[in-house]
Length: 300
Image 1 (cartoon, rainbow, N blue to C red):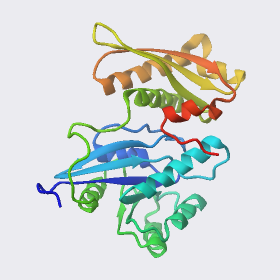
Image 2: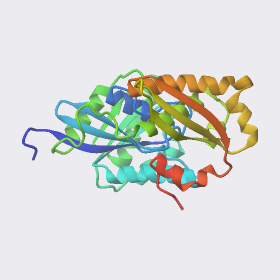
Image 3: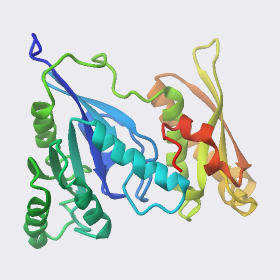
């Protein structure tokens, strides 16, 4: 038992792609620690956000969305999500209440049946869901996995998020805090910078290209004026995709860089000089080093 009444524990935030997991993690932490996009399968790495409520430190593992894997990267992402759930003291299943019990959600619910660790459920996007179907969806989930608690929330508006935070704080075990009080994520600055560039690729390119791209930090150096210089490459699979990323006269790549630079500077708390270039690497998704860089295990 903790002498000063503190609590700390890991909570795996899992769900189907685009359920709103990253938005909820950011809302629970109180600032941005995970990239958010309206596209599915945005999160690739297991990035941890650290939320504090009263005397409790809640270590939120924002896992990739669980979906039907088709390639090595997909398998690594899905494996990371399930490993996160197995390693945590508690699982928070986030379900898009607007989409309901689609096939992807059913697979996750089936996978959670019989697990020893407690499960809580957050029915997200209730502000957009059919109110007449919410109670039926809640009952369906309750019958399947008997969650410890079930919440109806909107991570985007913040409605119900405080209730989730309070419940998680009470559920994590008693013990000393595992990270300093002012730390909000265990992700390295390099990982965050790469993710923030990738977020802009998702937001600014509406074709399927983002799923065929990755971001790798090549150089990171501190300048004498207190600013940081970052050189990063955007990896794509085909020559035909290069023009899409670069844009006419380099306009698209410049816009991606400017938006990402602002986000990275806000994260670091000082000015940033960001230089991006595009590289065609047909087999980037077979690069072991890249998997290590984004915190994923090599999946056979």
